[in-house]
Each structure stands twice: as C-alpha cells, then as structure tokens.
Length: 194
Image 1 (cartoon, rainbow, N blue to C red):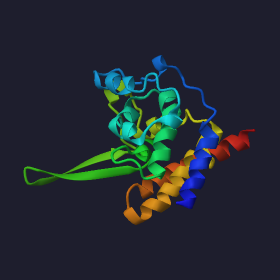
Image 2: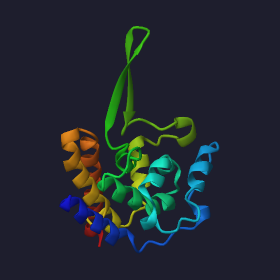
Image 3: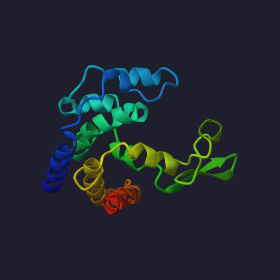
C-alpha cells in the first residue's frame, strides 16, 4: 500500500491544480438519455477530491460519456479510489487502456464457434467515424492529458503500479503495460521536440 500511496501523491501533484471545466462542458456523448443522466450527477460537484467512492461506483458509466474535459477532471477521483481498493464496479483503468491491444472473444453460435475481434486494429462504426480504429480513439482520448498528468507523475505511475498489482490477478496487465508504454513514448517524443 506504501507504493499505492506514493502514486496517489503523484496523481494529486499532477491533477490538483486543474480547474473544473464547467458543468456544461462535462458531457461528451449525446446519444440517448443515459449520457445526460449519468453526467448530470456530476453537475455542481466542482472538486474531484471530495467525491465519495460509493458515488463514483454508482455513476461508473459516466467514464464512457464524459467529454475530454470531463474525463481529464474526474479520472483522478476514480484512480485514487481504485488504488485505495474502494471501488466495487468502476474501473478507470479500462478507460485508460481500452483500444491499445487486439483482443477477441469466441462465442458459441448454433453449435459453431464464432470469433469476435475487438480492440486496437478494429474500426469503430465506420459509417459514423470513417476509418478511425480503437487505437486511434484511445490515443485521441488520452491526448487531453498534459505532460505532467500523462507522465510518471500521474497516469503512467498509476498504470505501472496497476500493472504490477494486476499481474497476480491477471486483470488488465497486458493492456496497462501497453498503455503505460504508449504514454511514456509520448512523453519522450515531446521531450525530443523541445
């Protein structure tokens, strides 16, 4: 837990200075009523550090519907609660790692195995998003984080620690490692450009 506390301190150091984006800029998806309902619960809550883990668990689907500004502001609350093992349902690491690797699920359909691929190289609804793949979308979603947030001070530290913690549970180990590598590559690329 000492290492988790160290990462929690890094998350606070990287995210504490962020301003709330404003209630009207929290919602990123407008398909159906679920995004409005889930994001609406966060309106008026302008300090992510005060959010109760039970509240985060109750509204875990908000992670799928936040705008980029919303995810950037509220993801630290989910990360800190996750590192403290206070979440039952919410999984912020999924939202930081999904799309970085290819995965597939085999389903039995009428007695025949049917493999359903997903992840990195799969296109996301080509009629709506063109040739955007899950990897493209994952990079786009993570591009909202500044260098300090994405580097070892914040998300990278959390993903690295979570990767070590999940090796035992075999949870998102591969995905977390891939995300951490991508974030580290982005940081190195930015440093070279300076």
